[in-house]
Length: 150
Image (tube, rainbow, N blue to C red):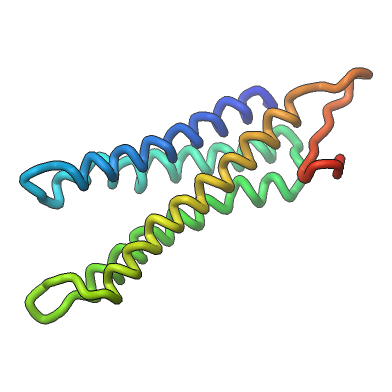
C-alpha cells in the first residue's frame, strides 16, 4: 500500500504541474475563448480531485500518520475553492463586462491558491516516499519536519 501511496501522490503532483501548463495553453490560445481552458477545467475539476482523494485513501490504507492523511486531503479542499475564486473574479467586472482591479486581484488568488496546493502536494509526496522507504532494521520512518521523526 505504501508504494501505491507514493505512485498516486506523484501522479497527483504531476497533474497539478500539468494544470499550470494547461492554464498557460488557455491564456496563449488565439483567438481567446472560454474553450481554450477546457483541458484546464477537466484536469482541475475531475482528474486532480480524484487523484487527491485516492492519495488520502492510500495514505489511510498504508496506515500513515493522521497528519499525512490530513495533508493529503488539504489539496482537495483547495481545489474545491478554485472555481469559487474564479466565479468571484468573473463577477467582479464592470457593467460592460471589462475586468476591474478587484476582479484581477481575486483572479490572482486563483493562481496563488494553486501554488499553495502544489506546495502541499510536494510535501505529501515527500512524506509518502519517506514512509515507503524502510530504514535499517525493517521499520519505516516518516520525517514530517527535518529532525522530527514520527
